[in-house]
Image (cartoon, rainbow, N blue to C red; front, side, top):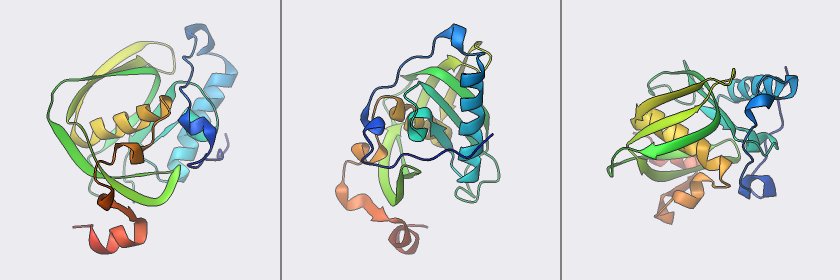
Length: 176
């Protein structure tokens, strides 16, 4: 396994729609190695999730996990999840807002409101379908990562640009 290089805002791969993964390709060494690299990179950077485009691969694969994460000390735990070709269905019109950050947009935070409750469906790393109902913080993490698969960054969802901040200022003035 290896720590993969993170694409940063401005890299065109972050603005492209990713390609679906063929089910027959999921067991391949190439896809399994990519998944291992995504997990290791996410953990090394203390990320809550990571999408394949963030490591310069235009495929519809995301990983997410929050367990004893120093960047999210008060967040509920999220078990390691590998999601291939994920789909999201909002389950409510109500929203959940929070300050988001991104490994591809380092040192910046922005306040984003997303669907408070979603149904999340995907294939796991063995190619088996699964679905989950997620609310609050876990729903936000999944929506954030899946946005990467469609060429969107969290800053695209910041409605009020006065709620964009550099990390140091966010930590001084916005952390409660």
